[in-house]
Length: 459
Image 1 (spheres, helix red, strand yellow):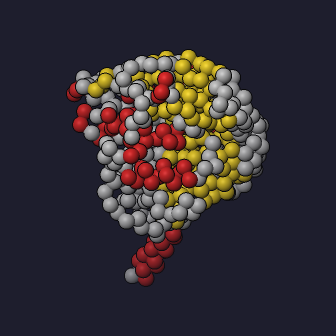
Image 2 (image 1 turned 90 degrees about the horizontal axis):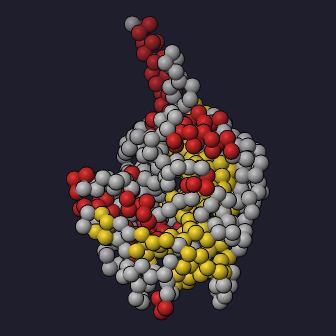
Image 3 (image 1 turned 60 degrees about the horizontal axis):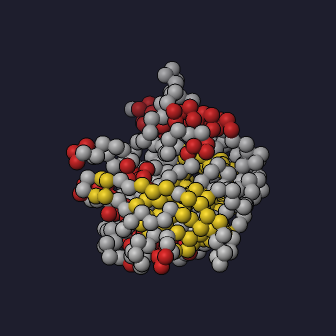
């Protein structure tokens, strides 16, 4: 009996020790008032159609080249093709430059889109404010944007982050909070746009309302797009067998500028950051185009010029919520070793409708002959951040795995947005803002130290 009691106590101590080790992170005690996340009605003021015949609507911009000296301007006209011309210049009263775009339409089941325009503005001066106008006659609309500073290691720059936005009242709160944090020069969007696929026959009218909803931000700063599962829109039952049809017609990316052959994975450089966008739902197995492109792109990264290496994808590789659990596992197995090898600073994902930040960890040592199958601390590894908490119609993910895994530093089931503020080559300040806080209040913060120039134990 004595031996059995000692063995039991040793086993109990071991279990308790493991539980303490696994529960090293913080699960926020904040409890958001749980309520249904409801889409705003079609007559909501944020969906208002601009006045005037054939007035441009759903105006948005994204980066148009590799280094930030070009912008793609997109808009929709409802009644007729109208003009494809963008007039622009550095004075709002003297739009002396112009560029010609193209126009397209698409059909989806019983829906026909408006006339979708895309126009590339090239050879822009760095660190400059440009004004641009689209439309014609009495329906001209004018907007502005600022180009990024020249590429360089100590160039400060601020990015916003939103994922899984949708078009609910909570989505409106997220976007309103984000716009109040007006330091960001560009927004990194980690997928799941309109959630039109939650409606019968993937009602594409909800793509139009979403485009008008985000215009108040996306017309004035580039949104860097990551594709999510809600953009697939593959519905053979109603004859829709071309994946990504609405998204690919409406939201271009500069994929060819980085040597990619597909819209959904690409890379851009902006100020002191090199941003790699991956596609969770496009083939990424060995020797696929995405695999080969990423392998080549990582070799091209010059940390002496763009020290901050940021990766965007949709389905998270590390996730301690009981939603979409391990859906990103096969991509993690395929690419995680490269994230460590090239010392990626941070990986942002969406998909899970909550917030979570990891420590710097990796799980790359497993092979069939050993038992090294758990994440371990690794100072060369990225921090993994899930920010799929934009506010969409499917609501929050509130069910978490317990105990909290040791790799998870902070998690909270709330809607919100984040800011990644690069200070110089060695430091960046990250903040996550829940919607229920005042605009200036951050619910989670972290000082990042750069993996190339200053690889301290920051997480």
